[in-house]
Length: 419
Ligand SMILES: N=CN[C@@H](CCC(=O)O)C(=O)O
Ligand SMILES: [Zn+2]
Image 1 (cartoon, protein in one colour):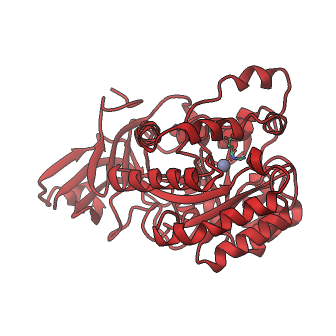
Image 2 (cartoon, helix red, strand yellow):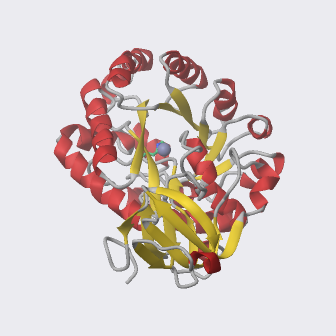
Image 3 (tube, rainbow, N blue to C red):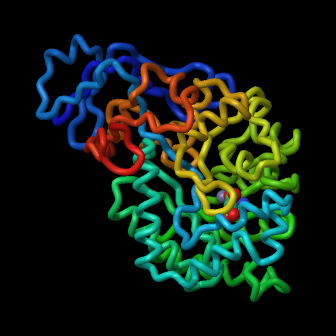
């Protein structure tokens, strides 16, 4: 054995098969007084701490009776961008809405200007810092969207940065092309020709393997349901899996569209209709909820997670890390928001940041569960049990992170870790 993790107080294996839907999210697969054996980056043995005493290993990690879980998966982030938007905070306080700031050429469009002006190296260095911080909070797989270029050159620049991060960083980065994130100033009068330009980019993205997913912001003043339908169908024809920013602010019917086009995930869903929720529960589309965004937009309106779960949907949670509507890398804080404002139980929350989040980025067969034969993506927490993480909020509970069996964060190491 390369590594043995011993004296695990509570081990959330999340063992099972497929995404976890509805009622099933209430039961959490766990073991007490457990140990894990790792070889060649994979989990090769799971058993009791007693049995582990008979096994020898090159490296022993003592969990000292604490909680151990799969590495967290953050399935919705806007990781690569330049600049920041703290100047929007006073506008928000004065009651200027998110969509009004965008209409005035601010918001996403202000990040677009900064991102166009930045070099690939600058974007890489900045995103690496954000990714380091996500890792320090226990995230071992992250989805990263483009969408702050909105022109051929800058979209490709962002996607190349995401690819390089995936190749060089300990965190696995799953890339999404979000060229349809807003209508750039120079195309304000002709969104369809802009969308066609983004469609024309899909072949290059495919050839260079720059993204697995294609996404669109379906919202009032951005792209309509009809434009989104056509765009996503074209992406599917080119062999991409699709996602949608659906019903974030206004209830346009993006949730229903996600089901119609077979999206892997439908994200936000704050304004999802009853019909949309009903369809979602009967589909294979994962609902990715982003309570950090609702919190930060400050309108007091959150996605209806209860109905989604009670009707049978698979729900995941993400930070939506971005410079405007959710500037945080802290998925642990999102777990607290989910408990308080989405009224999700701790058991549902853990499914939502592990196995279901992995399915939301087509990594369900590899990540999100601790099982023999799977990658050893593991977090050791400074917490006595799984309920403790959403409860004690605003701080980082991570003690150690293993990615592919290697210790990549430990006590006192890196930004945000505990000492
Ligand atoms: N709503 C669209 N996109 C992001 C926000 C991006 C931004 O404001 O820069 C979101 O998911 O919330
Ligand atoms: Zn987003």
